[in-house]
Length: 297
Image (cartoon, rainbow, N blue to C red; front, side):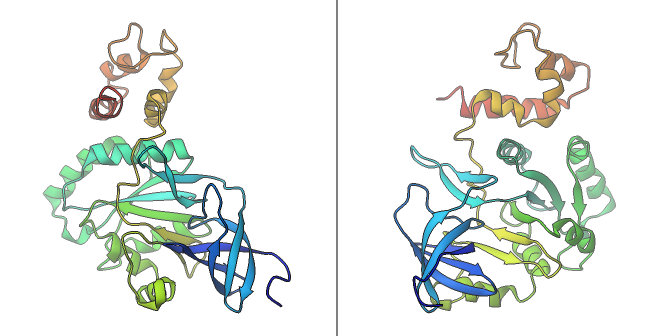
């Protein structure tokens, strides 16, 4: 095909600086983008034209099903597009930050991304520590799928791989939970693929780089570093409460439509907490997030 002959549809698989790798028909093009209000992000479907062999220009971002945003000064920035599900990776160490976990879940619930949990490094669990962790995670077991795995031994990976098939997924988690090890276990030849997608083929996976990796069984994983993606910018107080999945059956029963679910008269959510129908720890973390993001503004 001659340069500029016709537009192609492609998938953005890597973004670094002002360049994007776009895949189509088994080929990959290093592209720049024409000026647009919302630039392409990993996971986007785009229209592009070939400018020279192996290079191109992105002309349009096709409609997105859903978008994950990173909070920014005065303006949110898209991080990844068209993500179907997100796996929050936990581990015996560091100790689970349940407030951060709840914050991530709130973002996913409001973005239309299905959240799921992965507990890595199960080979390090003793019987007593396992019981303690199961106690901490008990409220989540009623709400979200949980996968027990070991990236080191391969335990539990087969069930997780089935869950990844045919979907675009993301992994996130605190530093030290083994997210990179888990990614290496799921993606064959990961270092080679990173080298292919990195600037100038150096193999560097910088903190500003997002990448999409195809899985052998079908589906893909988008890897974007850091948990700072999951700020609550763009989420109002009602959306915060909506992000706590177990609150929803009760929110419509509150006496007032603008109920804060704190000390409001006739608050059905708080009454459900008192009856033990909503986990008190989750409710208290809702109050902490509300105080942190809304009462301090």
